[in-house]
Image (cartoon, rainbow, N blue to C red; front, side, top):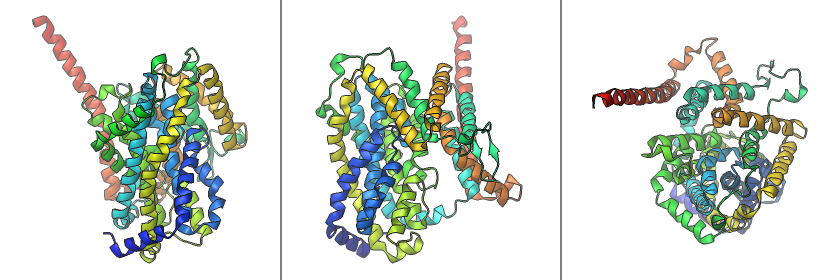
Length: 508
């Protein structure tokens, strides 16, 4: 499946391009910084530095942008672990076990584990891209509106299934998230849920809502605490323990590979990407674990599953860009801008005519994954110092950064207002045990689901039974039904088991 001649030319191309190896470490560092700061997303970093690629050759330009992408993918996990603030939408599931580990004084290990999982995940994603880019690109072409709608709906139900004991509350929270995500002007030109406000014409800012639901709502819980890590003796920064966590992740290599494979597959679907990949991987790993009750309480396996998936999805998202010329998300859309700046058009013809360049991009990103390990370790040595900062200083600082970040995203007060409203909603949901993550994924997928449902309706000429006529869509529907049925059947089985034991007790 690999053209060895073209691959050899790609290696020669990389060896003769010193610029690439100068800009890649810089790109990784930029991505790490933007990923760590709440509100400053990776696509923003890529957009800011896109003009700098104009004077680079094409391969160097793409490697620089993918380095920002890679660095940001891991950078988002740092605030997720240390402060329960997902630096990017791809780090949501990292919060579930990473933050409890930090609260227990295991922040060094958690960050080391996340770095190892991200490094391997990125490498696996690009290895799979190298081996399967042509057959996978043909498969992606088979995904139409019905399939994309079913994938989004299935992802939402998977997150609801993650909420053990609260499945239907998860479904309700996801449904409300969908309603929030579809506020504003629809693709059919109809306004919904704006209450006459011009600020809601473009809908609710998903990044501001995400930061509010996760981060700002958590700040209320930290007000009475003095430090993130309560135990003063555990409030240390040790490169040795970070390295120990890094090595520990490799003892769970099968979890990394499972998460990487899931992330790569989900990343190939345009519009889904890492935001869903890390949540699906976390859900899958929890269901496969022999000790699912440990998840959410500081389980390293949860961090590994989430980080390996969100990093490997980067390689998957490059399939649509390179093979079809279609951006899979905001990051690859900016890369498509770099393609245009260098008069390059992605697609099947691009791969067949420029195999050496395609292989050079993939090989460069494999080396980039190794560089992430070194740059990331040095970066963590500084970033982890946040555990030594008193919360009376940290909480106002985080609040100011999130408010400024959401204002910068929207350019109006709509961002900070959304942040405040989402924070209050997050506190109420946590108080009454409604899964916040289900609402977040509903908000993220709302527009995509609506648009694809409308196109499915149009394809079927007003008849949604077209889903049953398409094999892939039908297979996804069956998988979705099983997803819904499993937690219900599992709960019934547990109840019956308990009843049987209760009845047997008096006889004993």
